[in-house]
Length: 470
Image (cartoon, rainbow, N blue to C red; front, side):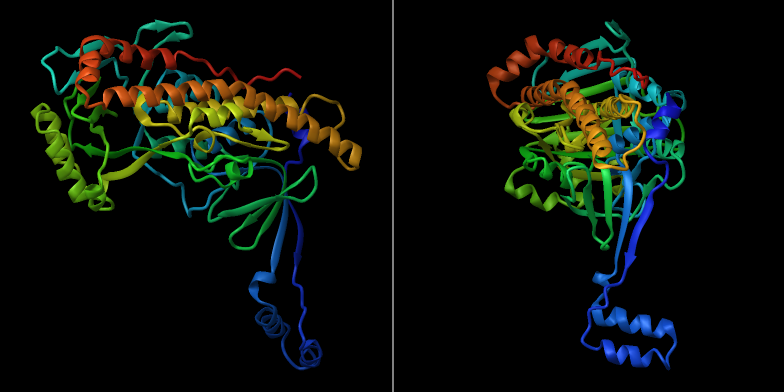
């Protein structure tokens, strides 16, 4: 199977052209100077005359993935496990670590096991055994339940995983050169029906047979498919982590506090690190918090004054460079209902597809699912026919059609799952962060246990293995 996949897509990129276009009124002068000056000096004169922007590099790749985040690297690693090479373009100079940690539920661990890195990550992160939801506005006892109960697809499993560790683990498993850093995509266009042109900020143009957008909430590729920018929910989040010199002493529990228009949570990542978050609906006066970690910390402490002392100590002792803030955005579900997840040889995954609020803890988990499903669909599409060549129009059309069908299959598998997660996360956040008396009563008296159960229910999902059927 791996051999078949490799034979369908070439294993190395090709440099097609590297041309200087010397359109200059001083051509005769330059020709005369060539008799007397060094060639390198002449080249410099040409570059100065026509401008560096005219010095264009063109490359050809089989599969280009935009964005070295969770979805992009998981897709690339999944393809690699199936014997298919891809190129990942990342705009930053190194792995971009936005946010310190993410909750990985049982569905995420099935995806991590599928690409072969689950065991390593488990050794570095503590298993969370229970969830405790406490209202800060009523005297109702906390709602507590196990996170290890068995579901349709196996026992529950949740850990708070450091994002940096996850991305580095994915990168480590990829062949050298798979990720190309400092490669900002500015636009894409069709060259032919079968090839997309990817334009980089440095003037490079890459031709590709498959283009996958995993470039986050501000995705360039999603715009090409007709998606609008994600909508602001009217809520923001402040996140941080505290690293203790010794053991922090916290039990393996996910502690959540809701009420008075705010929501906060605390997880142990391992024996020494505790991750926390705080969400609220900012006013115009809260703009001064942006890019000011000291004010963020004081703001959170002022809103969390009635939390247990040991919880407040975690916030108080969090270093300022370990605190960040961001607005919460999401893609309205109806856009996914009618929108194009794929079109021809282009598709999107991860936050480029389904940005959602963090209330369900499924944003990163869904990105991992996307990577497994997408790699499997692409690999299966490339093995549907026995013709390995694409040297003529007929062969290229056959290749294009099976790629198109593979991406459509991915879209079909992920559309309703994405709609479900986006909708559920938004609803949970709305209820838990509500300030209304009626909603507070319903949440604290009736819905608290139900909402905790939803977290388990939505994680009881299996994206499948990386095996394909030819």
